[in-house]
Length: 348
Image (tube, rainbow, N blue to C red; front, side):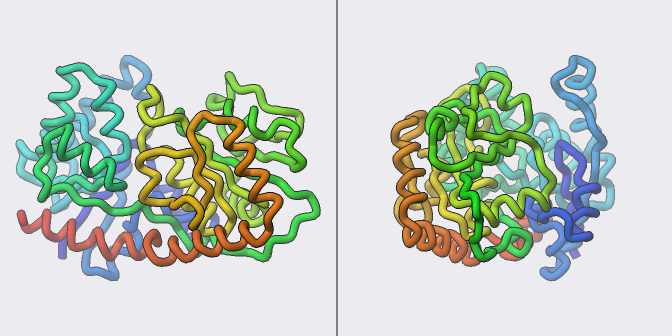
């Protein structure tokens, strides 16, 4: 049996305990808790908390990646988004083989100078497989970074469709919901779009994301638990995912995917800003209304259209839920990931 270490930048053990208790979705475990059904022994390996924004934290962060292959003795494969030094160090030691998932390497690569690009290229070429979140990212990895097409795989991001599930929509006070913590989220455009809207507005985001944003009087903002977030999705008249345009200097190219899938799994109508990687997750008029990025007027018009047309909202929500069940479940992700991990273990 292939033994796979799941290694993330931030701890996941507490989340796994909440998942087991039914208090959190298993989305960001990325199938680890379902791999045993497919003959793979997947284990979380927590690295402990470090702050890479502090000078000492950056040094320890890189040192930790260099030491990881020796810490992971007994594991055949490591599944990880870490691509600074870990894949290169693992290649030197020859184990574990690395399967990396590419959350934001494309934009990091484009923002970097020649030296950093060379490091990213070397790290990704050292991995046995590189998993991309969509076709745009896949083509960037092959065409821009220069990876071997046969080692680059596209797997859609999963969501816990059992935790986020459809509920009968009933709210005496209609509200629109937006959720996000990535620096590519465009809450400034969102605030302008919903100013004076004939509905309440709920923003779920950490304070640092909203520090330079002026929200209108009809908006409430804060951070909530997983269970509270699930309840907000279930009661929302629409879920809005406002994004910066492609090429924005901050955030990752995968920004917005989680919020899109959570809203879709909850069968709520989506209004989404255009972004290249989201094309694999939303289709305009089918499971969402897609509008140009950074355009408050277009965003406002789409929100009002959904709020004013109950049949449209129901159709978009049902199509989104169906697409999640077909393509984006965590169990489905595990079934696709298992053979990739086994092939990496076997050196294929």
